Image (cartoon, rainbow, N blue to C red; front, side):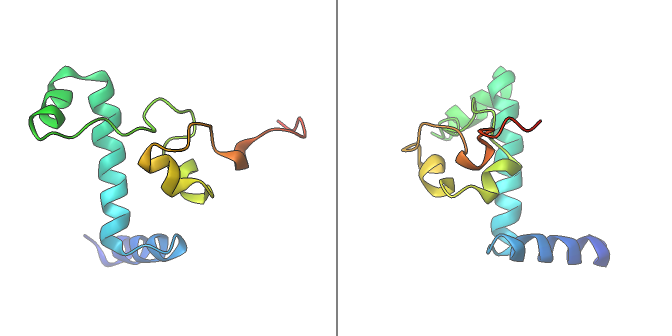
Length: 94
């Protein structure tokens, strides 16, 4: 990884209170689980290792919107069933 990319990753992780490893894990998890949701071969890999699809997989806010959500941990665990409250368009702003 180039030094400049490493610096971005380090600052991105810090922005969210994560280690760089946690940031990379979340990015890889998102990529693998969204791919598995559409590809039987990738889904079979998860199944082979006893890994269920991420409970956020079909939520419109899954991905980078999760990271600034106050319900991140609950949603990741599958206990929060709503969408990211910070994305509520209650003011009608587009």
